[in-house]
Image 1 (cartoon, rainbow, N blue to C red):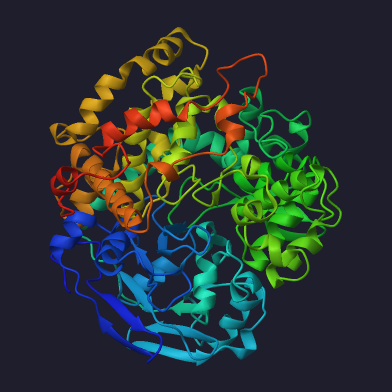
Image 2: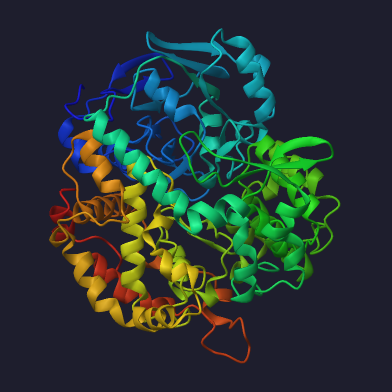
Length: 635
């Protein structure tokens, strides 16, 4: 439905794969005001559809590919699209974000989102154009790795410029953590590539020439210049990230005991310098790359055996190195590229392998995998993608394997989704975030509290005090960012540069000491965000809403948007049985101190959960109350 706002193409399409027909899905300006776009928009659509009885591998599991209103406006780091549906890994609501070109071109074709229901009768690829939707037999694409598939699509389409996404062999073979790849970027987490594979969709393309409407072009253009200048001057987004990418965090993670090592049994890796961002930049990096409209340019292009390949981000780098007791950076580069080619999530793959290594070590499963012995892993990854040999079992993920063989205490996941690379016993707020995250063990959906617990600021990482409210606040901010269609790295600009340039200064020390005691203040903000009816100078996003969309937005409304999205996803998951009982971490992280001489080095999860539920307006079972849902206009 057409919109009075800028930023929207005005169409959401429901595509029935059974009949190969499409119809417009009703999506009004009232919906746009409440849910904006991206993952929150997708959650609102799924909330109307899902009953709690659906399975990930079923025709009733709608897969939604959605954009945000900032996508296509030229706003910094706004070339994002989101994929949502039920996860085959967790069985609950899933979302995965990607920076490839597909979202830009979906809007050029005239659509804000597409909803895929049902299942194609044969393996197909879907072509989206301004004049309709066209299905093609994909037998010639079957079994192709992701770069080969995308290259073949370029040969099949007459247009030079178009957006594309595809799955690799892992998605076709229903690996539970298969991802979706667009260009060199991946919507990797939660296994939605397997859902696309189950629906018999190998690839989707989009092309068109429509421009994203802008409410006030002059003010939008001026604000984008202002915002870009700010990001380029900021120490994180203008210096550290462009120079080293996310891999810059390896060294500080090691120093703070946050570097996941040997299946989360430790937080420091003796050979960390051999796999650091500095080593990557010195020995392998050729150039930096970025998504469309991104001034940060955090992606790496590396040289490997005479080839120019996409380099690893932090999660892949850490989990394929220290977590497996591997100090060979060249192998990490090879595996990172191979896993993208196969269409598999590097985080879940690496964590499943590390669990299997420890299970072998403890005599639970004789699988031939050992820490530090990595020569065979490329073949193992291929076997997982094609479900051959032990790969057929590894394709199920660590939760299911631990239920079969034992070893649940060291299966490092939450709700079935393997954790990211930050060891939470040295950042307990991050541990809380992992446990309560709507999609499972996700550092982003968990709020990324580690940035104030050692990787930006250093606010007593062991105390639970104030962490519930900090976590909630950060979660709400990141949810709103995602709904807008922007990269979470733009949020790094929220941190005043003075606190980052002099981390050992008196001012920073005072701020670090003060933060845990500000839980009460953050509780007031979380409970009454609409009192913050103004724009913050470091949060450029809210004025972009005003100029590009013509939508009334301020910092308080921005927080309320994120809060609405977070509770909306939680309410859906509650239909599928999620409650306080599922907001947990493995015993390794909650009962075994990382430092045997310091009992504080565990995650005091239950203590923080109680405070968090109260802050969120959930009951003691972790379920949003009717009062909370009405307040947020979800009911």
